[in-house]
Image (cartoon, rainbow, N blue to C red; front, side, top):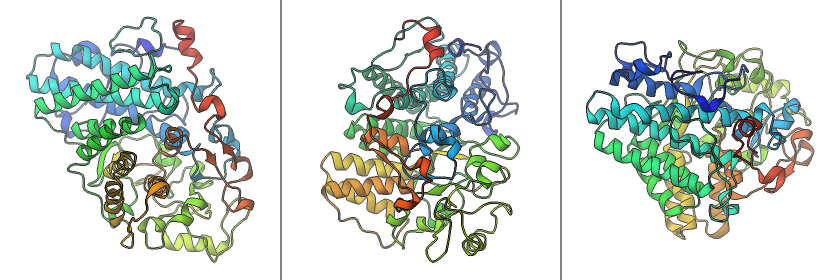
Length: 505
């Protein structure tokens, strides 16, 4: 297999250029090579476009690995607390049993995928200053490449590094910090060094976005708000609450919260609050390999048609009746369903098809089935949200709580939930306020790939209840896993890296 660290624009799956006369009017498309890319700024823009494309293509000859969608599903949703489905054959993934299997493709995939993005971003960063174009154009392109690199390193750190509270203030093992096109042997940095690089890349990107005066035309492109949003998420994970608060406020600037009608419109197309997403259209898609083919309630893909995705009963029961978000999950109250699997009885199934007439006709229906995610076209066409202003309000609330600004935390929750629940007012303080922040984070961001990552950074346990114990998880998935389980929730470095790079221990 081609070593992932020898990635450049001349090998493997390289950067992607637009075939259109005007890149800025197009979606991510096909490939080109290094010499032609750096002949003009138009080609460089296509290369940046290719970084977006890397987030939505099939990898490793497996339908399950589809770029960022796989990270959200396999590594964020499946192993968390609030994503229920009748998939006993997937218990090793859902229960987090692969984190120490260094030869497993599931352990290797995120490493492979994010270092591919990093390698391609490094090529742009290395060569952009030699392109014959306006300085402002160079600045904007370099800022975008830095943004992608920072995002990839941050995501890797969440998986393959210790949670910050366990890192001895960043002294624990980090990642291999590859910052140019070299493919030589390198040791692991510290986690503190990784965060330092993420911060530096984002500081540099923000300065370059500002000096360029440029802006994007498409939601899948990176811009200054994306850089702020990544910064906010990274700072929150690092427990740098002052920075997280500042960056969250900057990130949501210009992205007001969506209306209730937008919120219930399917989550397949960017709304006014989507800060960053990946492209999704019928003319360029992954068909049965796409994220929404694994998620959308109206998809005809067998994985979701037979095994619909459901919210946990515990989280559902906490949602106020006046909250619009409750309507996006099938309430089984007053109806019968299988008490071992959740499969709906005939009356509950009829209710689901009455409420959501575009459910695929041969789909199974389960109690607590989700209707948040819909496919715009079959089998799973649609954009994938990565950052929304909703998350930034939740980041503000959490940051304010840990900064002992209780009114600030309450106000952030009030602002967010006023757009979802007209009856909501936050009056909680102390530990109850933190639990309220966590609950609304789980609800607002349900299915978007946050669950496991949030549990890890908080040091909270996975605790799923079976049907017999008042929950809605099948028995093999109804587990309790403390933060010390499975190498302290740290994915080990893949064998493919250590075989190639003996400096990594």
